Length: 256
Image (tube, rainbow, N blue to C red; front, side, top):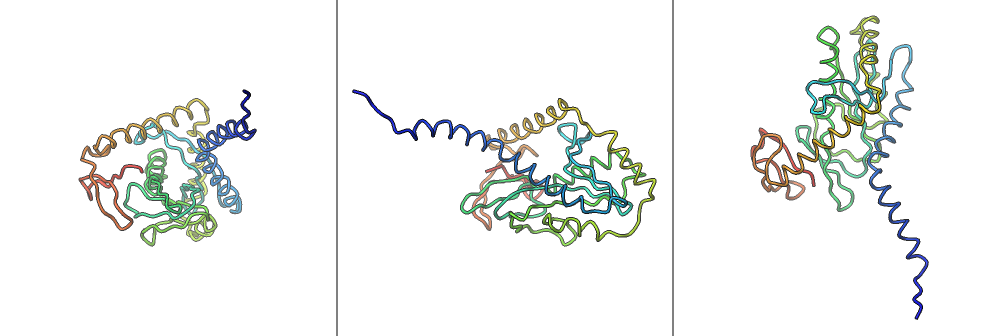
């Protein structure tokens, strides 16, 4: 007896494989999309006053990977603007001091690292690179695409903004605090220390992934990877969650 399978069964297997591959690359694709939008926005700035540096990878003694990858840096006589780009959808909930925030899409909840903390690390890496003489007026900005609904409790002075407000936010700083020569020195220092080598960039990515994997494994064993405390169950405004027993000294929360 011959058994005939519907044609869609044969079509669905390669389609399923393609969807799985696409899913694995989706976060990276979304990240590149967000950075591309920001590049376009930053292109609106007056090129005689602002120098835009994109996708910088610089050495950092304080970073676990030994390097710090920064989405965008804008250098001007009005200050140095350090920009972290995020392309997320749904509601983004959390507090400025939290180690992780929550992304809510319908009933699904996912964790994301607090980008304000990420960007703080980038600012420190640039300060370390420039030295005291040039590390003046560093302005950190975290810019989300309009697909996200920001529901994060932050201080009024904290620049957690939508990309559409990015240029206006930068332009509100109009007091000259750097000489033209100082601004030029900063640009040159960042350009000359920028790591463009592909293999070194791969190494940076591998170290970040390894660090995150080790942190998740430690948390699964009920131990806080930040301070060594215990991971305990808590009740919060948005439901039960797990965090370090040493809260509020340690604000680590394991991923979902």
